[in-house]
Image (tube, rainbow, N blue to C red):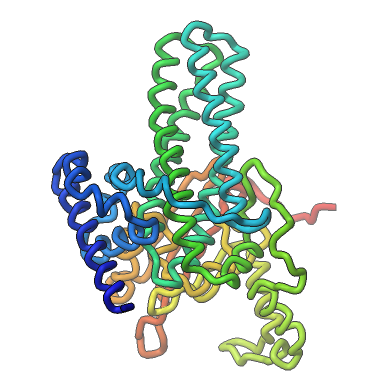
Length: 414
């Protein structure tokens, strides 16, 4: 009986995959949906996400799936609307994500309402309200950062990387829209009718992407994640969430229910504290000996951020410095470095790694403006005594202060 059920499920998935491929080939999705109505009507969130991942694994470009993601949701919306929503306790990562989505809807509604009023009344008060609410909308980036760095990371550990490949790219499209909207508003103390039209066009694009993302999270991503991830993973996410912060909410305290439940990161720390012999082990280095404790203190205090990726492209270490340029948590350990970057920049990361492995490049250097900071980023190939590639280290530093220095300073501040 179980074999029969599995065969039926595979047959359904192949039919759904065929429907998606035909839409990608250019057929109107309305006609495809009509032909496959029965199988699409009964599709589950798990099937939809698995099929998209299968298409990516089969060579379909992530950009194509990202571009047609809204079409996919439209095809399955009838089925997705009928699926029940799992009840979670306040404090559970999914409960927090969902609460943020509810409050984001209020912010989007407010911006839309203000833009309607601005059509006939370009007052300074309305403009001020618009700027305030746009800043609130941009604060939703914390929600996306937790998805990218925590939820996606744990899903990848169970070989489920489809959502991160597709959704991260959409996040970045939303971020581009935020920058466009902010740039227009930053130049304006008063508005004219043409300005309102421009703002409305930019916001409409952002609003559509964000509302569709809410739906995809609620109906596809979260159900798939709850099905796949064990409680230990949710506990680990819970332990790391505050590193990224929350959008509009204070995290609830009803979950986890038992105070005795610990995230893996906390358990590891406890074991290190208990085992003094391991903690004081001395490592003979080229120019001295350091204990684990001393080495850890030194790496944490360096004025640069270091991340080590081994020869298999797996992240094994990051230096937990007091003020990191780019946020990191324990969820990154064991993650493929390609998955730690948005799809748009993955080809650059892969090219660096390929060049390092081939021996055609030893370093790669970049610098960017991030808010008011000037960030310098370097990648270095690591090789053993025989010249064999053994991994890459990424070194990042905020050079804003150093670039401002002039003259000399020879005295210590009081």
